[in-house]
Image (cartoon, rainbow, N blue to C red; front, side, top):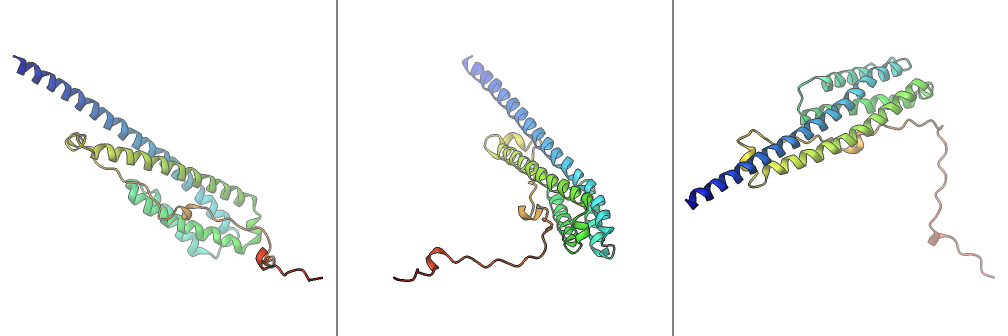
Length: 207
């Protein structure tokens, strides 16, 4: 009699644990998916800025056709739906590289550097890159939490049968590569002579 009671208690406790563990996995998975949506929102904001930026630069540097084509092709690849976070990161790295080339073109055109529309677009792009960086960190943190949760014992015994699998991180090759290059507005000024260290300063003349 007592054996059946004990077995019944074990079954009930195990069932509660399975249910709680499963629900925990579902909540974490939903947080991961919501975090990815936030990245997607900022990425699409970035995509929307690029055509206007290209057209603005094209108005001053129409002969830079290869640069424009590179940006357009990279944007088209990045916008394509269905990419995993890992694949999206590769495409975004390519787009970032193309954008840096485009913005570098502005250095050779003083009138373009002074164009208010160009300045506004560059500021918006920089702001978007900052938001992408924050969203990426949040997403990667939630992915790490989810991946750890489904791999530890004994939770791993539940994760596999119920179809919970590891999620990919969204990583760029180098965080500095996402930064929008600053376009300098100062003329080429001569470099000031370096100030010698204090220890190298000449001694005062002796009396």
